[in-house]
Image (tube, rainbow, N blue to C red):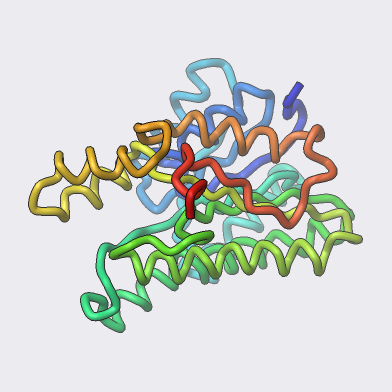
Length: 255
């Protein structure tokens, strides 16, 4: 069940947190994983960790906001392996604030990574998937792409866009053998969340409040999100496309 033997996968933002957990989970399931990140040090560490376990991985430096770099990475992957079976668009950034606390520059920064980044990477790999009539794309959205979250105006705006892009591409290419889904996590304990908590005047109080918003009374773990990604990447999910896979510990249940 849920094996990825002989699959070629690429995960963006795989240097830490959810992306690292997905890359490691995919490799354990038998995939060759291209670990990509803008941070070369952390990305290489994840790839080396995978290889130390006798699994298969290679690090590639990738800034998802650059069309040129995305195109170069796609050429490298396709020249090396001939195809890409599973693309995970995980790279993303956050911002705390209401509209009045958000600048135009903040909006542009989040859009360039969270939305345009998903577009850029998908666009360079989709032609080869269409040619083969086979491909699996998994986007990381957020529970903030399903329901509104206080003080996350810019972040929610971009994650709703990711959910919309997911549905649109899934519909456009369902008959082309391409499946596209997005995962919508609630609060997950990652370096990303730790960085957001550090922006509060009382980080520990904010952490406890975030944990309490989930019905289960805790934040999620990266490996729990990676397990969902493994299911979506596997052949067992062959009838699943265009969906928002919510993993939020009950955050949205009463909304």
